[in-house]
Image (cartoon, rainbow, N blue to C red; front, side, top):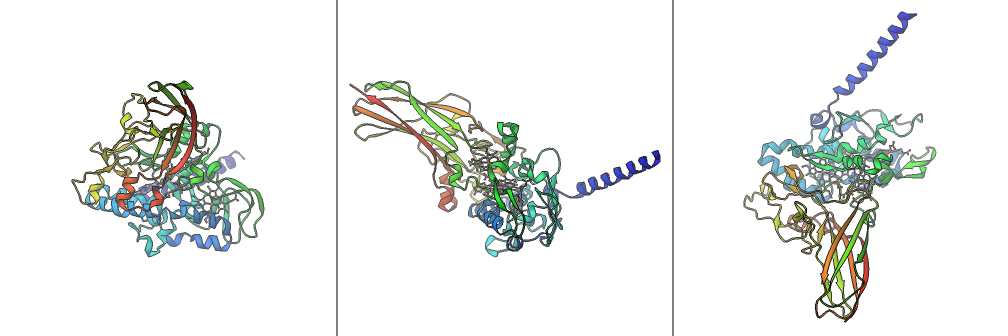
Length: 453
Ligand code: HEC
Ligand code: HEC
Ligand code: HEC
Ligand code: HEC
């Protein structure tokens, strides 16, 4: 009897070991290059037209299905990253690695650089159904740099068990429901060892992780309905929305603004201090997050007097180290674009493209020469992190000395928070279509004081 238990135990351990080694034999991250074929994976069209029509249409509209084909991705990859990798071989692996997250099938198939989007190859599938639904875990302790473990095959992983479809076997995966799964692509380390994308890490340190609110709860919300034609009806079908910075409706209202004065009545020549409270009500990570090197969030404050004259109120300096990167200026930056463009003496373009003196909520990225860069792969260090954390409130002040000729009567002061996905001077310089640098008004608030004689 005892013997049998020992034997069963030994067999059990062997089976476990075999399973563990099988997973550890699967290459992940950079090592997965060229370890699979496109034909190991079903196309999204197949999943979408056979059974999951509704999820397919949601995915089609999300950035997930455009991670390789979207204009700015194509421009940054082919105009900057690929030529950079050709000029400086140290960056070749990094440029290949873009595909590990943006078109993982192409990367695993060794199809790098993939054909241009206009060629309509399978690289265009971007982050596809069968890619996500055959991921089984990640290698190491921290998810980052596409270190997911991909096991394509007849078994598809999802949130439910027991219900097998005619097409595939279904297995319940705890992993797909975790933020770590998202982190395999939403955390990125540059070749200089700098965290240049850390949405998952920011979430993990913030209040939402502690409360068990995952990425999915804000980006893949639940609704009553069907997840497959002829399938069961469920009260909690995961919606494949993945709405983020490219959805103005998601961005609007992210931060709530309130502005108040220190005195309600003032005479020409008086100094009035306006305080703006900016409260991050909506994001589970910092704002902005993700492609922080591209994004710009800034507060513009202006006053309008009773005669309709407009005054711009620059933000008061706080005096912290690196603050100059958080106040709108006309200095030039991003000179390292000159490497890929074959212009070693490139002077750069204006850093911000917003009114001088406005407060910017950002974290600057620096190239090995210490110049600000939008090339996250060429990032050797970072400056002050002046983004707005989840549920954080930041206070900013603008002190305004009322001009002698200001109109007597009400003075209305408005604070506006704006967001741009890509700094405008860079977008214009590289020919990125306008929607990438459109101004999204996140929120605004106004207060009124009385100017008296
Ligand atoms: C970025 C990864 C990703 C992509 C791309 C993706 N899914 Fe999902 N899918 C998920 C995650 C995560 C869940 C939910 C897992 C959980 O909550 O445990 C899910 C859930 C599902 C479910 C179960 C829904 C339910 O609640 O019963 C189906 C069916 C599904 N996906 C089909 C698809 C199809 C079809 C596509 C392509 C059109 C697709 N998925 C694309 C990650 C993805
Ligand atoms: C295989 C890598 C990969 C995985 C895994 C992944 N993503 Fe993404 N995701 C991307 C890429 C690449 C983009 C950027 C698309 C673009 O703008 O080109 C993106 C875009 C997004 C966006 C849109 C952001 C915007 O700018 O509008 C959201 C939201 C998002 N992902 C959430 C998630 C969530 C939630 C999960 C986990 C359930 C997840 N992602 C898993 C690679 C991935
Ligand atoms: C409490 C809700 C909430 C949670 C939890 C959450 N997000 Fe978000 N996320 C948002 C909102 C709101 C936005 C839009 C504002 C913005 O662009 O940052 C957003 C934006 C994004 C963006 C675009 C960021 C940018 O500025 O370009 C990405 C990518 C993203 N989320 C991924 C994730 C991932 C991955 C997780 C989990 C690790 C996650 N989110 C958790 C609410 C949430
Ligand atoms: C570890 C995964 C990962 C790697 C590696 C990676 N990216 Fe991304 N990339 C993402 C994710 C996730 C987003 C979405 C972040 C967000 O929405 O803020 C993104 C966003 C972008 C965007 C902005 C898209 C937009 O419209 O705002 C561009 C451009 C881009 N990546 C290009 C590249 C290039 C070029 C490389 C290689 C040098 C690269 N990426 C490497 C995951 C990755």
